[in-house]
Length: 329
Length: 294
Image (cartoon, chains in turn blue, orange):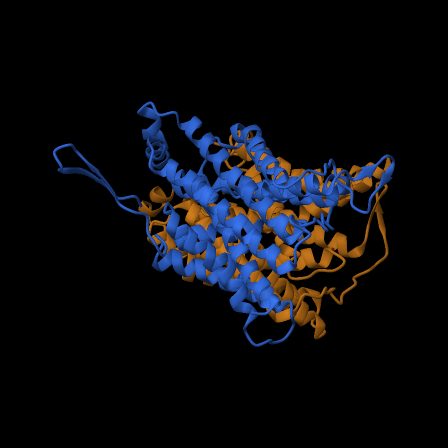
């Protein structure tokens, strides 16, 4: 297999892995708990930017500014940038969470978070000193730089695979725990959950932080591979793509969300690549989004539970009689 | 001093465009209880249709009427074919937001696919001479925009206050079930509201494209959050509230643009987030705008 093809396939695997991690994080927030976090992409961006800045080194050497401007930097060895970037995402969630997670009508909350995402994009583009504005941060060196490109890529696939396994373990731990029951009760009826004495605010904050941490992790993984990150890559529509993946794949179910992530994150981008070229090259992006829009409307109409619906939970009593069957919507 | 007046003047133009759009948006929210995120794409569609007619030497006023019709028809179609079926199924408001966002993507990229990513300008100039009003300079285009906005607000007020259909609209917005049991034909009034708000969207699209120096398929959607800000600030569903809020938001943008130009629309965004988080009902109740004198 030629080196080019090998790198291409490795790239697909990396994108798939990153999408899966990102969608699992969003599914924790929206699928399990019902938080419509339209500001999700901000946390992925934070992860990417922090990882980049911690790999590239400081922007200023003495009083000389390098060709990119950003707020801080350090030249840390791999995998520290990724770990610290993940932590940055968690830290930001702790700060922002209490303000955002009020009891508000679901669609109002979605709009508020979408607007936050927009504010973040505008501020990043306007304030060049923050993270190099519209140009974004680029030339981030890949780890294992001394090896050949093909070997590098496949080692990175291994890194991403480890990341996916870690996140799978984390999500599994949450799903098979009492916390998960609290989350789903919050999702179905917040008032009832609260009246039963469940710590609704705490549960929501916990999933918010957990989900956003995974977002930051996915962003850090992504930028160490592709080497560049700019505001045009994290417009508010990107969160919508992740939402689509969760809804189409099947919210509340890890396998379903993973399927959705692969279809929407990798499948559509690559499938459109192989269509015969027609008209303007920029049409390709337009057709992609049109297809996603139509797909999501179709799914919401005909199969709102997604490709792999959420599993029914059966709680058995000790005498083996299933008294309570809980089918989540 | 004249700089502030220039900012206020600029804000007034913004307020005019925002007013037309946000009144339409808030009408749709009031009648259907859904945030129609595809609103700006109806604006965009009508704006581009107007571009086509203007390029064939149709005059501005006729093009405005064409745009209003395009907006009305497409809004009616969207509501009947997309939103109503989902609403009849009992879809949650959030699901409708996702649907409308999906439609936004569909329409915006559909327009992009048809006209291409390049920038356009309306081939109209109605008087470039600057007219001075208290140290603020307005061009002919801008005065026309303000005039159109004022005219529309007046027409809406007359419609809501003095016509039977206007009363029916207000009744349905206040208490739908009571209105229906009073004999008001809900489906028909809803259709009228969608048509009128769609026409407003069409006019707003033309006015927006007229005001900016160049526009492309993405221009209208950058306006969406500003429109939502005005609609929510004025109290979702309140027409008069939206008019007032449009002035507030417009002036906020105008005055911020004096100090920090690149952040001028961000002020509207921040305003919206604060309003949503702290007082989602906006100015509803503070001013009792829609209550009639006893």
